[in-house]
Image (cartoon, rainbow, N blue to C red):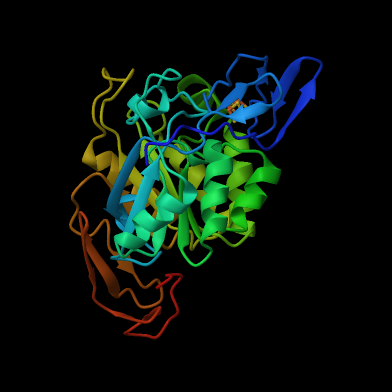
Amino acid sequence: MGAINPIVEARYYHKEGDIYVCDLCPHRCRIPVGGIGRCIARKGEENMLSAYNYGRVSSIAVDPIEKKPLYHFYPKSKIFSIGGIGCNMSCKNCQNYSISISVIGKKRTTYETPEEIISLCRREKLDAIAFTYNEPFIWFEYIMDIMTCDPDLKYVIVSNGLINEEPLKEICKHADAMNIDIKGFTDEFYMKVCGAHLDDVLRSTKIIFKEKVHLELTYLVIPGYNDSEDEIRKFSLWVRNELSENVPVHFSRFHPDFEMMDIPMTPVETILACRDIADSCGLNYVYVGNILSDDGSDTYCPECGTAVIKRLGYLVDIVALDGCRCACCKNRLPIIR
Ligand code: SF4
C-alpha cells in the first residue's frame, strides 16, 4: 500500500509520426508527448503511451450485488467493489464526477497492486470483485491484470459500454457479468449529454451478449430528455430483437446532479410507465430502480407468474427458487446462483 505508481505501457495504441493514437475506445484520441487522453487514463511519455490510471484506486467498498445493479447474478450476495479515476464520456448528469472528471493529478488515490486488491477481497471473505464507480473499460491494463491474477474470483464490470471491439472481446474472456448503461436511445441525446455515440454502445452490448457474459442493462430516465414513450418503446424492442427478452432491464430514477441541477427528479409514474412499456414489448425481466415500489423490483417467473425473488431496496428475499428453477412450475430462469 502507498507505493509509488509504476509507469505501465498502455495496450491498444499506435504511433503516427510523433503522435500516439489510442485505440482503446472510439474517441481514438491523438496524444502528443506530455499530453493526456480525454479520459485522463492515457499519457504520452517520451518512449510510449502509458496507462496513467494504472493501479490508482479512488474508492473501495463492499456492496450488495443488487447495487450494481445486477439482479440475476448471485442474488443476495455481497461484492468487493473498486473504482479508479477518469471517464471517456462526459455526462452532464454524472453522479460520480469527483472521480470521473478529476483533473489529472488532483484526485487523491492510493496505489494498489493487483495482488493487494485480490488479497483485500479475500480478506473480506468475498469471491467477486466489481469494477465500478467510474468507467472500468479505461482501466483496461489494471483490470486485466487483476482478472488474470486470480481466475477463481468472479468479475463484474459496470460500464458505459464505450470501448472498441478488440479490447472488449479480450475483457469478455475474463469477465463474468456486466451491467451496461444505455443512457438514452437517440444519438442526439448521447452527443448532447454524454459526448459519445449511441451506436458504439449498442455494438458493445451486442458483443457482450454474444460472448455469453451475463448482461443486464440500466436506463436512467431523465425527464424531458430520454423519457418519451416512443424512445422507451424503441429501446425495449431493440433489447428484445437484438439481444433477448430475457436480458434484465433496470429503469432508474434520475436525481439532479453535476451540470443538470435544474432538471427535476423523475416522477415515479414515469418510471412505472417505462416498466409497463417494456413489459408490453415482451421483455420478461423489467425492474425499477431508485424508487421504493411494492413489486417493481421483484422477479417473476414468466411461465406461471410466481414471484420468485422479492426485493425492497437492498433487502432481498429469495422466496420461490429451487436452484435456478421456479419452485412452483419448475421453469428454468436465467439466474446465476
Ligand atoms: S480510452 Fe481515453 S485516451 Fe483512449 S481513445 Fe478513449 S478517451 Fe481517448
